[in-house]
Image 1 (tube, rainbow, N blue to C red):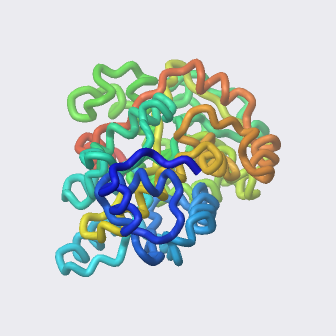
Image 2 (cartoon, rainbow, N blue to C red):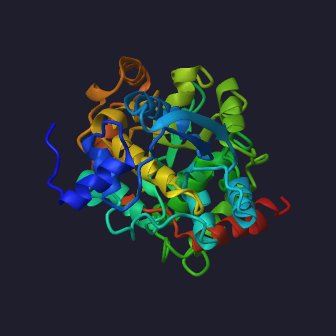
Length: 397
């Protein structure tokens, strides 16, 4: 194996840090000045985004490839609202037992507000690859939202898409106004979940200003006049709002509702699992813009330098194309890879088979030929959620 050139002092420093054989990526982690462990460490990982459905195989592959660095990984799940408070309490008590978190923009933002994540980007040499060079362009824009306190590990264009049962919806809406008219003619047959608790609901909320050509899609206070008017009118024709997308898809699949808003992943995966019938169809509305989404790996402040060195090495490993290909999963976050040039042909056969049967050939065209927008900045998203709760859902019909 060819190693980079080190001074004698630098080489001895690396040798002292670990007597185990080290790969090139391990040496790069050492270049940040962080000592690699002299014995394998345990990493405690908390998933607050459902990300393990996409990355569990990559974590397992890292543990198998680096037994000199990792002895064991533990995995637990938490909700996005509860995770930041839990970590903050552990940091205050100086008893941190969470090493890695898998989070979406919501928990990421909450942690940024409380300054609880390690600033990986500011490290002199964090050992990571050139993210701008390897990421898909929208994934790199999503990386910017982390302000260096997280690393984008999976990405998808998301939605909002329109899901419907073709046997029951004979005249499919093509515009937002036609959607509103359809709900008036078919009361209680359209449904979406509370945006604060639902990816498709959140995407629908952020996508409407583009569909309606509102004055400023990034400003839910001063720029969403058409959006709030539309949502209040739509509210009159909706029975209630489920607390989460899973409950919504159950109703949609059972035939209680005929139409909903969805995303690429929430279209494909429930049909793979049999929750929604295979024949469910999807469409877009005139003026459609994707509002993309991503999952991040972040590290709470307070972990040891040895663990941080291993985590940086692990992130580098998980950004390799072979590991990114695992994130196709069964369409849950379709496509899934944040890194470019990772075709479906690289994915495990089970993923290829599921997407061949339940995927949509039109997705490639839609992804290529429609604008991709970032979600709202954290502060604006909180405002949008609060206003939806107070001015839309809470209004008597």
